[in-house]
Length: 282
Length: 242
Image (cartoon, rainbow over all chains, first blue to last red; front, side):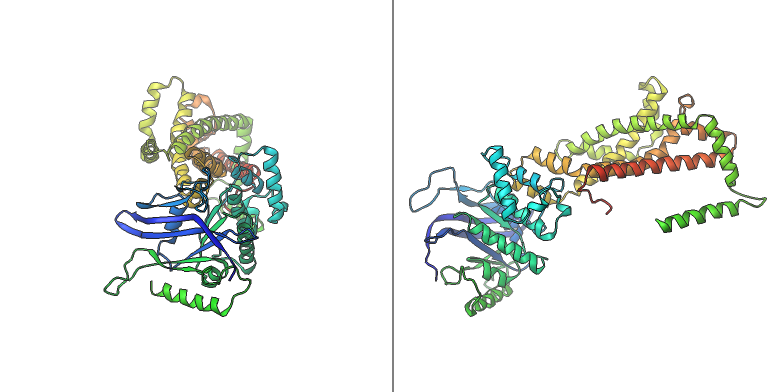
């Protein structure tokens, strides 16, 4: 098991619930993720949400990104404008629209902006000079293999280039948190690898960088994440499922010694089977 | 392209064959050619220019008005106005021309405003369709980059759909171009293709009528091609119809 310590909370949901009209989509969502520190290395966090279709993952993600106001409860993230408290991290604040980067499964971009224009737009509110922004964008374009297509529009990009641009846009927007709704959906092997590499790049760039993603690929979730939440329908006393999404199980891969491994072991595969069983029952 | 050319040749061939006998429903190509020469000598080019001028004037006014209404439609207070104007496309124009005649002094202005009203109602309808088709993902993407409501309107709705505006204009101009002939016949003195076709119809000159129909079709297709070319040239990202 890699040695690690935890500090104050980096993401917290308190009694979150969303209704569309009379229909409750999610309710009683409660979880807290603590900042993880690993001696001698920068370690961001990767959190996966898995669950069967229609259990409210996308609704939960929109709430966490501040794009949807929950009917009850709240989502909290650190307020980086305040001073951190020793051993407790930053004070928390309610998430606002724009605090958290959001990448949907279609990797939506501005259709009328070239990659370079899109990245400049993403950085428009950063307190940097034009030269500094230009230098930062140039460096990222090189690091992310997008330099040659910097003047191209989204419709002229390959799938992989489009994904990297959509993620990079959020990274440059200074979003320490990036939520990705099913980022591996419909991708070929090469593009899956490209997104996986982007995950590693982001999590090793800044201590507070946190990627939150959903997927139907449980192997992928176990391989990449250090914390996995299963969203499903809870079982009622009569044995039936209540059709409102909530967190039915949490797996802390750090505590189980399964996080940050280069290769999947038998324990990982056993965990995959365990998660699948929980999903099928919810 | 080759297949389309082949069909055109077949159609022209059929025209020659079908009008070669004694009894014919349609004037032969030779009559149409004679009609075309007559029209040319009577100043066909000037009449085409007059029609294009009228169309351009009405289009510019209509575009400004329709875009203002359509872009304001996401703002809740303006939504009912935009919807109501869109529904007024079912209103018969006869009624509108009567009231316009009471407020407008000269006939040319009357022609312009009849066209503006007619065009705008269809243009607003199409633009509202374009705006409604903007996906939630595009709005969320802009909001996740801390765009204010006005920035979302500017970046996603206005700048992000300029190519669609040009395409909507292209499609609606086809309807306007057809209607133009009717509007031009309101005022004979102002000239235009509508006047020429009305005069030819009055004297049962079928060769001229066919020649004029072909001219109107070709000018219309020219406008269509130009707007499509303009869209593709100005907006490299545009994938409409690809």
